[in-house]
Image 1 (cartoon, one colour):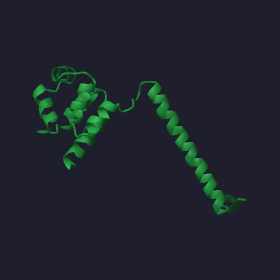
Image 2: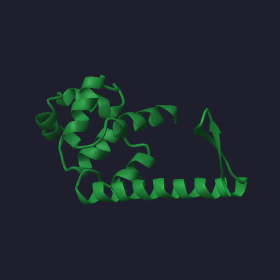
Image 3: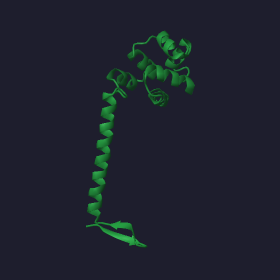
Image 4: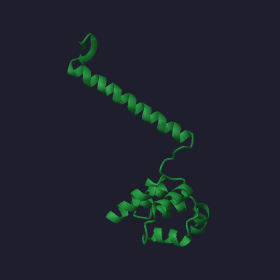
Length: 131
């Protein structure tokens, strides 16, 4: 059973058995997990998010360039991605071949054209370089 301790006539602290504290903490964490799941599910249903497709996942895990993997999954040619993003085909080619990483502005344009987060490109570029 919890006990409320007052300071200057106002509630200031709660003292409770440790087991009760752990049970309360677990309920709070479960509620946070449920809310995160609910939001993720709603985002998927509303089209605000998508599950990472197996085709892309497999290519990324095999070390393929993320721009190439996403571009081909979205069924763009390099020219098509150029037309949608405004990034030159030569820059796209250099990024895909690993010759260049691209500026933040360039990566942002590509990610917007591919309808993915910047991190979906940058994180896998870093992984590829660390391998």
